[in-house]
Image 1 (cartoon, helix red, strand yellow):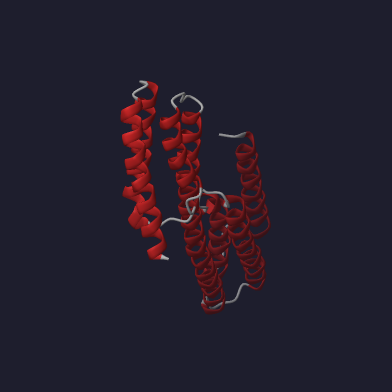
Image 2 (image 1 turned 60 degrees about the horizontal axis):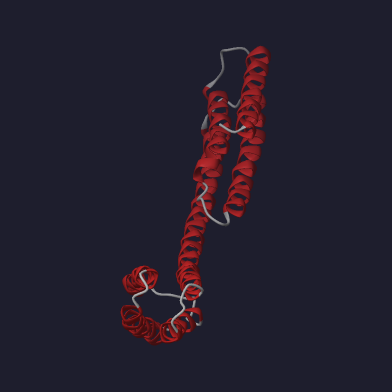
Length: 226
């Protein structure tokens, strides 16, 4: 566990200890149902604040997701705490007012929280897709560029350059239906690396031509999908 996580746990424990010590010292242990309802919802709102980090989707924008979700949970906790303390002091005979009020607050919090979690999931999925799309062109281009530096045969180098130019100029945006074709391209590039390393120029030229055809097919199919 990180030091910052430990400090957060300590801070959370301090609040719970102080709140409960003050509550039971000043008000005792015997209370009406309305007071216990407020007590429970205060702890529930604090518990939601504690588990908020576990609701945050990991990704490039995790910090933004965290800031948004934390703000929602912190606001709910603050309102539930204030409302709960007010009802504890008032101590109404009927449980209707504190129960209905806290349920409404919890319901609104749940709706806003879930809506933001759904939005965050969609954003994170889009980011992952974008990273995959960038990785395809970047990884393929880097492999081909490194390969060119190790080719001495002019005809082989010329053919591999054509593949490099085609891949490097390929649209970064992709489509789910092209994932298998893109994986095939990356696999063929790895095979081409082995052939080039073995100095099999004829095999390298033949494989490069086939690879160029596949890259062009991928780009043409992508164009028709957009």
